[in-house]
Image (cartoon, rainbow, N blue to C red):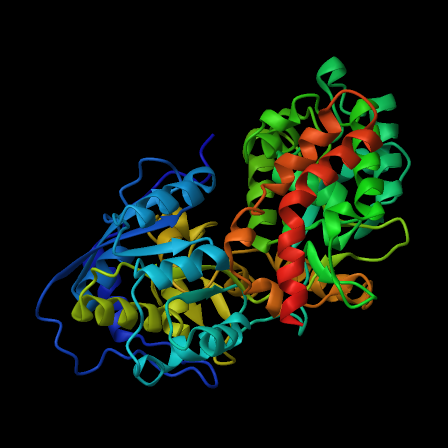
Length: 528
């Protein structure tokens, strides 16, 4: 199904003029656009690949926001829209073959990144880049990984894309994944709609729904759906933080490094997962589902009661809109955004570094083209740029009050329906998570929920359940490490689906993998 409303194109000339005549105030510490006085007389064309969550086949170069960037920077961007499914593998092939686009929004993987930098497959930044682009430099510093990379690499080879910037909701960030439930059904089977549930409470609700079928869906009803990556988040990572791919290597109490999937806690979480599957609480073919199919089963078809997805205000709006557009449900009464705790009532996660993905540049990109792109990236991090990339044009699409508050003009519920290209421009240097906390096109209820979830999760965690990032592990690169880049969700799913005794299967799997894992543990131990 389409993921955004029908496209409508505004008059490009009036929209561009609106921005030129109405420059928004910038944040404290965020300087204005760094475009003044530069010679943009030569048109520069760059190819740029990114994951864009919009309709397939849209020409992102046809609306006024795109036209503004083209006119303001004389920069023609040829956009390749990737999907979440094709993102990693397509870019890996292009980069290793020397055919990468001029610019790519890439899912950061340090082992691959170190290899790309060593082989000259990605472009290094100019030495004075932080001086030239101070807004982008401030964002780079806020990502957490930026300064660590500078110390390690001795040069800059990527721009981490920040999750939060001016609107960071909590000092320490954990996983943002939420569980979306049919609130009306939770209440119909005798449970309270809450902001969080332990894994046992969640399964009690699922059992009651399976028995009572509150929506009358019949044999096609399965309380829990989600595609493999997300269902593993709900059943394993929420129970044991060391089962999470980014946290599997850690220093044990004895001082030596360990591998989390071999720990008993991982087995315990797998057992809960498998029992729920055998009990018929989970869609029998969840492992074949793609992102979006699980959402539709709950928000549209009514054949499911819960799934996992990002706990973002924009997602909450998306799922609410799907209910409104495709059913007779009132999402305020039928949709619940919650999250899952361990059996002990703690929130489990590794601390999340404040970035997701990174901009990388082709080694074939000229200095002039690199500077033009970085001018656009730097502009996109200012308030003026953020407003343009998320809302459109001041006066035409939104207004700024005397107190700095934002308000939409007219009845456009989702600005991307008017300007599809903003779905691309929102990926330049910051994720949509940050702006969604102040986005006036998103109902305040959803924005508040996003902020509250971070605060509440942190309050329900302790030092044993919210573990810090180990930069020695994050940056360790070797041939042995390359051999253990397992696709953990798929590995876990295969274990719970496998015939026979789960413990025996898990132990055999651990023994098999440890042949590859042990050399990495030895290397990490040698680092101290």
